[in-house]
Length: 157
Image 1 (cartoon, rainbow, N blue to C red):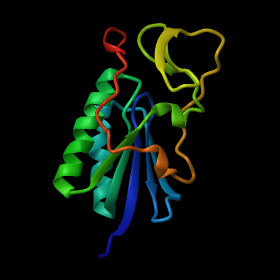
Image 2 (image 1 turned 30 degrees about the vertical axis):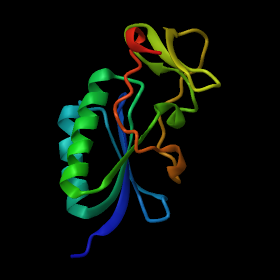
Image 3 (image 1 turned 90 degrees about the horizontal axis):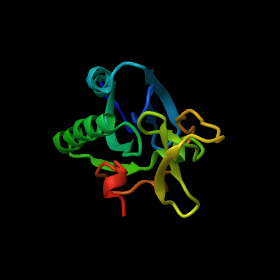
């Protein structure tokens, strides 16, 4: 059986985890959503995806968000990238929640200013939007610079 070649986007910096399957024109053709822990659900979902599709490229959100989810996601996807010889590209989570605050730790949230600088602060009156898989994937927002972006206050520039 011939498997369709697809592009995969993973947003796992918060719950629920979102995985989008995109066709050759970068149109969303299938969506996976789960509130399970990243460590438990990524292998299950990717087994199903790999049984059904041939991966052309992997795209993911490398931060900011849950530090543990970012680490696990990166290690899992980097391993797939190496094993299957496919490119792994990353971008910021702010592209997928209308640039609204992203949960950090406790009562603090990540914010991004109009110059792209990320900072952490208490949640003020800002509205928070859920993450959304785009109907059409804009690959120009992704980069080969795919290392996790933790945005830890003690190490920010």
